[in-house]
Image (tube, rainbow, N blue to C red):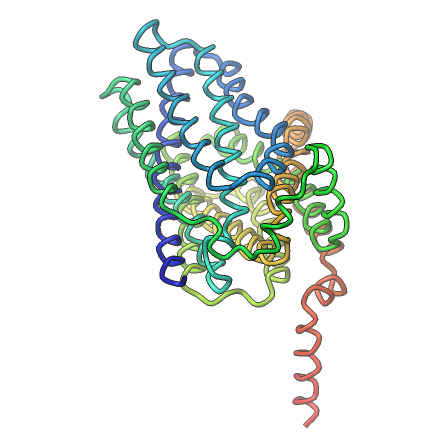
Length: 427
């Protein structure tokens, strides 16, 4: 079994790398095509909405389906549907010429297929690999996504203009087909216990199943705390998502190439931390580590304002933002990976799909509102004060919701360690 689990570990990583690379090269090409063809930010924004909205609406239903039906089948069907959707767009582009309507429809389909595949894969980690290597699996997954994020803009930039858009679609179809073949070779229930398989056979309506998922979630205080933190932190970090580009491009007049380098540094930070976590032993106190990581992220968010408050030369400012983005990318992995490993171990297998999809839906719920609100605030108030206030609120939320009593309840070993240290110091 361990040999098969090792095979799963690397096959899963390669599959995610290939699929993510194809997806991001496609996204790069389509984004450039829309902007060049229309020159309209609204057309570009509508494509982003087509990527986000279907996923958010369908996530709770996807969770129920993932828990009710074989996850391997869902992953493979989703990947095949991705291939067919891109194939359909290719046929339309060759036959009639590419249109925005065809792109928007394809974006909606890809949003749904990627969401089903993502929820099914996330829910299957404990079935694919042994418990001791869950952190390694999550880290390798993040590493493959980060590597694709770094490499795909470079490849897309080299190819765009030199080759036709249909070739980009063919590359994505080829990558998706390879992912289907790799996924088909894995046993998604290698480490799933019989109890979970038996529970899956119980007949229930979709509404009953979704209601059961919510009820299960409400009985898990730790998961509810994580959801509330994700909801509030994502909302407050909308200040950074909106403000970062606004400050660097509009306020500090950073050239586009250098701005691209700072965003690349973010992906490199994620990649480096993912590599580190994939080779080190499992983090002992994940909630404590996540608390410190979010506080550091909030400090970095506040630190974004430093060149607005103090005069810096252009080169020093550029280097400063490179370091900030490296740190932020590393922090996000440092927060997410240990928390996901903890949830993988604590959530019952028969509820994983529903719980992970609900967490994703709730965590994303306030982000669009946050972006609209902060877009308004940046037009009315100085950017530095908006970011500093949001940074302070973020620290306050984490300190309140992950206070020492909550941490000790989740990790009672911490209290024991402190008692032992005090006893040693007394002697």
